[in-house]
Amino acid sequence: MSGCRGEIEADDEIPRIFIRCLSDDIPELVQYIEHGIEEEGVSWVVQHGYDGDGVAVAHEASYDSSLKIGVSVHDSRVVIHHKQLPSDDPLFDIDQTSPETARKLGSNSARLAKKTPLKPIG
Image 1 (cartoon, one colour):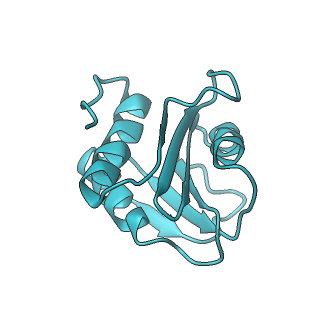
Image 2 (image 1 turned 90 degrees about the vertical axis):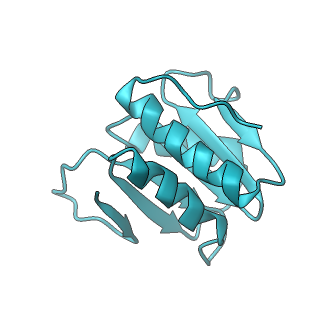
Image 3 (image 1 turned 180 degrees about the horizontal axis):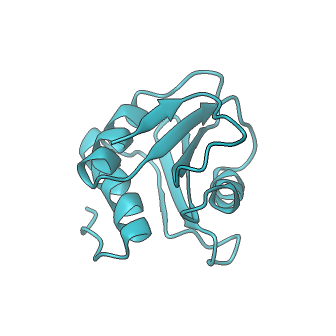
């Protein structure tokens, strides 16, 4: 499937999940999230250099995503948000995320976009 890291063209109309990193670098957990999304056949984009609260960044990303799904990653914290949820109430907000859980969270973000049942976490 299609994933990219960095900027996307203004006229790019591919529906994507937006993954935003709250750092100048891309945390290692992002690769596991990408694997989970890729397994479900959904496109995504990874962007870095964001700062602020992880929940707020994920919610903002959900507004920028045509799939209405936003993810934020900071160190070991992963937040998944949907545009239709209240801004302070994400679907998932998990700290101390393991690689296995990150992969499931990636899969669940894609499943949310596809409207299929989510995998259990934990």
